[in-house]
Amino acid sequence: MMRTLKFKLGVAALATLFALTACGGPVPATDSANDLLHFNQDGTFKIMSISDIQDGADVSPYAIKLITMALDAESPDMVVLNGDNILDWSPSLLASGANVKKSIDTFTAPIVARNIPFAVVFGNHDYTVPMNKPAQWAYYQSIPGALGAMNQIGDRVGNYNVTVQNTSGQPALNLWFFDSGGSTLSALGTDMLPAQLDWYKTTADQIKQQNGGSAVPSVVFQHIPVPQIYDLLKQVDKSTPGAVQGSGVNSGNYYLLDDATISDGTLGEGPCPLEQGQAEFEAWLQQGDVMAAVFGHDHANSFHGTVQGIQLMYDSSVGFDAYGNGYLHGVRVLEFNQDDVTAFTTHMITWKDLTDETIPADLMYDGAFAHGAMYGYFVVAGVIVLGVVALIVLGVIKVRKRIKNRH
Image 1 (cartoon, rainbow, N blue to C red):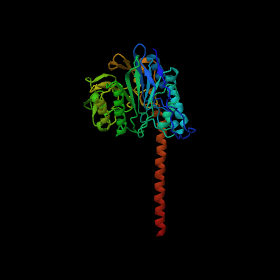
Image 2 (image 1 turned 135 degrees about the horizontal axis):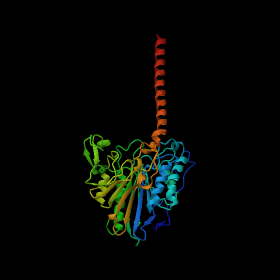
Image 3 (image 1 turned 120 degrees about the vertical axis):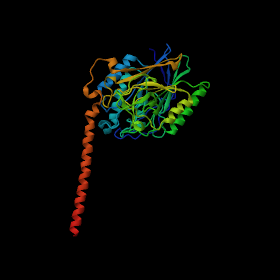
Image 4 (image 1 turned 90 degrees about the vertical axis):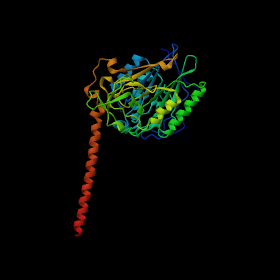
């Protein structure tokens, strides 16, 4: 498959210096805002979305093997790293920024080795103290094939779009990338910033104007799903076989996939969407350009269906340090033809599709973190709690002694 990536002259250099704890100073890099992608000569273009690697400095060899096998099986023209690319509270990543770089180098190596351009999306586990998101963005941009513009809006980093041109040099497909925010422990209450939506609307209008007044069919990649993801489910009784409990405002309900709206994939856990994110989906409908959106975040989900004409889909998880879905760890592939990009096809490709190799029992569902580092945090937390209790007890004893001595 012929693959072309045109780097325009005059790519702007990042002028901002990023203070990197234990990283040895600022990281120089360039933004790839003017990069262009092109459909192949046969009119096709294939994207692979990879989410939730979510690991420390020593990325699981099972994750790297899954990524490598998927790349070789599908030969994508572009890869999207769709968030939670690292595990922010991994002890190794908290130790130094050099370890963050090591992690990034490890999971991008199979992509770089195959000369595949890639885009980066940040998730709620991508911020870490030694190397924040702007610093990580700068480092990603030093890697061959990196696409995109940092375009920081508030605390959200990496809000940009990339256009895929047809063989005649005209825009045929537009790709949006958004930082959906969220924190280490939860995405509950998270919302897209109004300024992000303003930027999206303004840029979409500009693209439409440049395209003779017609919207360019677009796909959104962001880590945390929109709340409309629940429109692909049906509420059932708690005792229904296979039912999963919802999360956040939906935590009191139980759900199954709604066959009337679902095209493929599995439901392994209650979706944890942007609970306040109604405005984003409404903006997509208003602009009329978004035909699909791809999400990560909920590792055990890979389902795909249509809500109000927009296809919403998960890409599961490739990580084996955090929790996952056994042999259904995988990636999502989207295939387009320039003759009608709206008729694109999509499918999951999973571990069990690629190999008969057994996954170790402790990595199947809970992940290595649950069987290792997590217990270290519990021990540290326990020591801290005991220390606080001891200080309180000692303080009480001292106060009582003083009172007793006065009498």
